[in-house]
Image (cartoon, rainbow, N blue to C red; front, side, top):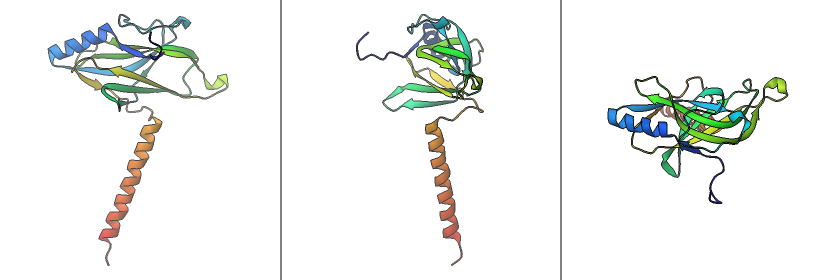
Length: 183
């Protein structure tokens, strides 16, 4: 591996590439729904396209949010937050789970390694949420639908953006009231 290559990264799995090909052939979209978390039996893993499942899945979260990489429009960043009251497990590997639109058969679309991290529970002495972000590179022009959980967590960036929108709406409302006020 090159010296400047990232240590932690995600790859499109062979099953994910096959899903993209099938989506294109059938004119359907791919629906990405969850981020799976695994401890990899406490071993170090290297992302491999041939992987079909996590070594040892310990938790699964709905995707909370998505964003685009500012430098590459083919890269989608998928976000999920593990709440403070969920944990008691190690994180060494991640996966993106998806299926073909209209079909419920799940596949491991992308696979990633993760720096070894113990996700504590409050009774362990700390209450910590853990934000996961997985960059997914789309290899074809297949339509990707990312199912974002309605009850998900907002990332800090989204929260700041939302508060900016609310502030703009408040300012605009005040401007309208000012313009409409009788003279």
